Length: 297
Image 1: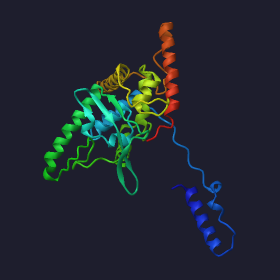
Image 2: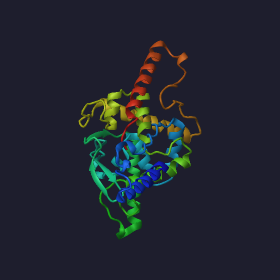
Image 3: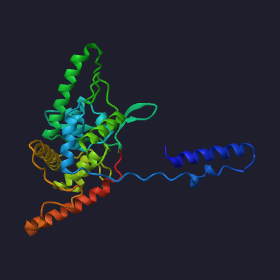
Image 4: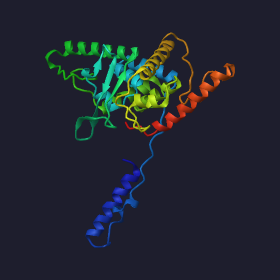
């Protein structure tokens, strides 16, 4: 609660007391105009390559490694990741179905539909599949340690005793990992913006990227979107994340592409054809950035 909220509550209470004593004719704090302004949303932030590498390294040292990897590799929302079950994964077809979201309030936790109400089927990159395999191995170890205390409900991301992780626990874990990795944001939602930006910088068109993200804009139904374009986009994103991580692990420097696509490799050494292609990618990256500024958590 902000200071403005506290002062508004105090004034509202005082005027309600005065209204009860008939010292005033009405409580002006009950009007819409009297409500304190809400703080604006934090601007979207996409991690650069060095930050992605440090984040993946920090996450892999904990049980949250697969969660963070899948967040970056798919751009899925926090609640969607928490709601995933093993029945949503088709290892043979290498796909993931996102049909639910885990909602958490002060009073309850419940599974419900996705933010846009759509169901989407995503291709899984090699990086994402590896993360899921590691998560399955972690669960097998948890079951052995917990013995009869483990409750298996089929969820993918769970506590050591099998309970589904909550959106709030994921947020808190990401804050810790972000501080360990020394990156420029502590918002878990920014993994979604990072995936969007890297998709576009990697050459994915805005419409396909929006379909991967399950975004309601452009105004097209993406529940059925699955094909060569999406597969190529997901594979490209996974390969890009792998290269970033491998370069950092080998002591090299990752390709330095700024998050918003405004600074790519030195354009002056490119042909005119490649320069035009990069400019188009930069324009599309900016368009998607504007689309994702209000992406729901």
